[in-house]
Length: 364
Image (cartoon, rainbow, N blue to C red; front, side, top):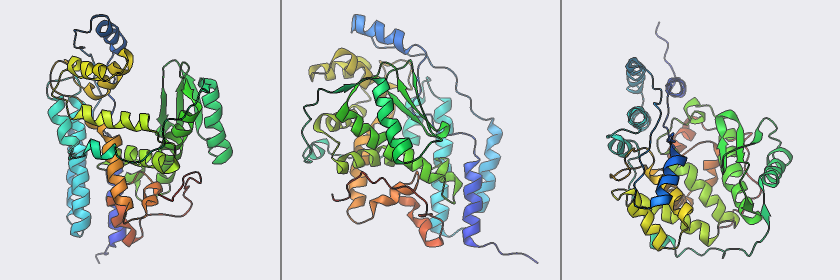
């Protein structure tokens, strides 16, 4: 006697299989010679960096039997769910080939396949959004003080004592969700008002979305095997800065400028750098902003780079549009995009025992 499997169980089974696909997108490929090339470039300023990348491990080609197995399961689903999982499989295939192409001639082509975003944002329209002016804040916190502020939020406010906040020799602040770790560079310094913004962006968006993902019934959500995940991850974080009142004009302009640089990826590294210098950016800041978008290719005199930095402004616009007719806090339930809303009707989105930040003002 054949046992009929419910639609809900079919979706769970497919989600489990998708979550087991053993690779994901390398969003921030780091060249081995970043510091050397930065030093060489800033000394000459007539030079396009030549980045060297290590080889990224990818599974053997036999991985595709997993895709074939999932494809056969997908064919048993109603169209709305089969189309959803088909798009995820295509995205993961594209991620596989993009990772293999880091530092190679075909990186830009593979990147555009994986990031098939419509870059149709009007930057000048975004600039008309009413924001608080930059605060007159002379209170600068060092890495130890930033660590203290972060600990008070994670440990005292949210009782997330299984997360670790550490410092290392690098500059900047990074969240490593799978390691349950926040890393602060020992040389990092930030204005106190900027730390408040980072708490909203890094802790109360990125960290809490990861925590809530782990409560979801569909494992591919917790494992970030979701198309357009990064677009809504960064866009929602910027949106939360906006509605919490911690997004100021200078920071928002930097998000918009990153988007505009992505639109000019056919330009060389030096051309983009000169553009930012003409607009008043410092040597180091201009270099780092261009580096962020030209990552992934080796010879930066050539067209190419990565779309990831467009996600802040483009994703913000998409979340703003979504918030007009929907409860935007659905995006807090995990590493979700609006498309995962389809699983609510079959009881596969958990809204119990999730953490919604109390500090975010919901009155837009």
